[in-house]
Every structure is written in structure tokens, then in C-alpha cells.
Amino acid sequence: MPIINRVAEISKDVVAWRQHLHQHPELMYDLPQTAAFVAEKLRGFGCDEVVEAIGRTGVVAVIEGRSTASGKVIGIRADMDALPIHEEADVEFPSLVPGRMHACGHDAHTAILLGAARHLAETRNFDGTAVIIFQPAEEGGAGARAMIEDGLLDRFGIQQVYGLHNMVNLPVGQFALRPGAMMASTDKFTITISGRGGHAARPHEAIDPVVVAASLVMNLQTIAARNVDPLQSAVVTVGAIEGGEAFNVIPETARLVGTTRALDAAVRDLCQQRIETMTHQLCAAYGATADISYERGYPVVVNEPEATEILADTARDVGGMHSVDTDLTPVMGAEDFAYMLQERQGAYIFLGIGPSAPHHHPRYKFNDEAVPYGVSLWARLIERTMPLSA
Image (tube, rainbow, N blue to C red; front, top):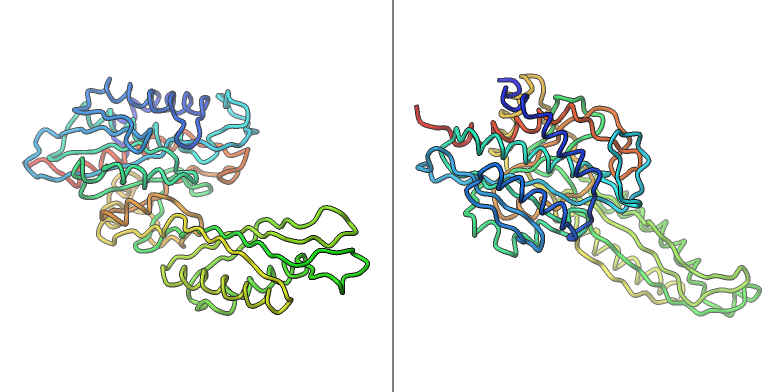
């Protein structure tokens, strides 16, 4: 079954919602306009229940099918927050807020799920309950975890949960996913190296933390190259170095800030252990000391195999038999939908939008031609997983 006819008819409305959200981007949990817009639409669709302020600013809608005898409850989630990036893309409806833009397509995710909610509320061609989840603060704020801690999954009795993200350079009408680990965990480390300051002309009287930092940056690269199984994946990246201000002064301290990524919990633990051990031992070799702050971020996104196949089959219904790549190479980026998949069976899928600048880039541009594919995917998922009896 291709794009649902009713979805094709309402796609212009969905695109208009997406463009409105794109013009009014909001960040993290501070989503008063976005959350109000979403809640107003959901109430207008006639959803059975609309609840605001779940996980601070999340919005949840409940849509019951013509029957609920199956007892099934399926959740579908979209993220709502934008990024602190000034838009440079050539678009018809650009951001109206300087320094903010939807550079990751969350405006589209929200509009697509609104479109699916409208279709489901109008037709109700399913036996069970659809829980429609609009989440804040995916971009670094762990909004998924906040909603879970606020009782999302238990309060609404969610049994399975599904999510979607647009994918640049995957053709429109194509989907991609894989069972098991699909997106990486993300952790942050901050290392403060303390040496002994002095005059640049008399380095023998100092302990130069900049030299120690330079050595440490190079040695940290051996964790992925020499400590992790070559058949596993890991990233250790130092993204910032700070140390000193004057050209002729050896500073007292230097600071490194970086991230680790992994697709396996054991590899994640190994990276942390090796960073801590290597840092302390290398600093000691130079006569310096180190203070390490290691912050655990989002866990690995792990797709449950059965739910992955259900989602893949649904995508084939929408895009055709050859529209789904079920052997996607795992992505080392992170996604806080992982928290929901730790609590419930489910799966995450990528929706193709064709060529664009990368996500989180000021010239990123969502392709509205992908909208009906996303709306149809969610509508069909509910109808296929909770079919009405003949």
C-alpha cells in the first residue's frame, strides 16, 4: 500500500504546520509556543485526551480506536526542540528568531506526527490505543528521560514505542534502520591538568601542562586504535583545548574537553576506564596531576528485532518493497530516544529527505516532499499493529 490517500490530501496542512514551526524555533525545555501549538492542534483533531507538561514541556495525546478490545497500547514519539544556530539556508519560510533554527528537522518530526494524529483521530481504523508523544529537549537535555521520570510510559500504559528521524542524502521515499545497536552512546569528559607555571625561557623550572595536554591528546587516540576490538566501534575525540594566555608564560593548568561514542555498553565502560587510567598515569610521568570529570550522556539506541521488522514491513507498505534498507551501518551520533527503548520494546527508523547540508549545519534544509511518507508510516504502523477484526 503506497501513501495513504487521506494523508496525501492533508499533506499541504502538515507542510504548513512544519513551516510555521520552522519560523518559530524554541530551545530545549523552553517551548511555550511550540507546545501550545501542538496541544491546540491535538485538541482540534478530537483526541480523547491531551495532557501538557509531561517532562516539563512535553505534550501527550491519547487516541482510541473504534475498539480497544485488543488491549494494545502503542506509543509514537517526535521531538520538538530546535538548535542555537543562525540559519543560512535558502528557504521560503526561514527562522524568524536570530540565532535559532530547526537545523535537525525536529519541526518536521513534530508536523509529521501531528498529521498522523489527525488521520488516526478522524478514521480510528484500529483496535487499541495510540499514544502520541511530543518530547522536549532532545538536543542535549535528555527530554525523553524527563518524560519517563514524569511517568509517561506507566501513566499511559505504553507497551511499545517507536521513533523517527530524517536522514540527509537518503532519497525521499526511502527508509533505513537495523535491529540491535543503531546509534551510539555519547559521553563527555573534561580533563584539567595541573602543572607548575613559569617563564617560557626557563621551562626546566616548570611543569608544562600544555606539553602534557598535547601528549595526552595523541595518546587518547590509541584507545579506539589499540584497546577496542577492531570489530567493535568507538570514538574518542578531544573537541577543545585551553591553556595559557601569554606567548612567553608557561601556564599552571591546561584543560581538555571531549566526547566518547560507542555501540556497546562494555566498550563504553572500557573507554571511560582507559581515559581515566591513561590520563593519571601519563600526567604522573610528566610530574603533573589531573582532575577528570566524566559525564554519562545518552545510552546506545538499541532496536528490538521483532519491533524492527514490524516497522520495516510498515515502511515497505508505504514506500514499496525496495524502499527499506534493514542493514543500515550504525550511526555514531546519539539520540535520547534510547532511554525509551531501554524501558519498552520498540524501534527507531530513518526517513530519507534527499540531498541537504548536514544536520546541525546552518544551511540544513528539510525536504517537504518527505512529509507524506512519514505521516503514512505512523498511520499505517498503528493500523497494522492493532488491526480491527473483520
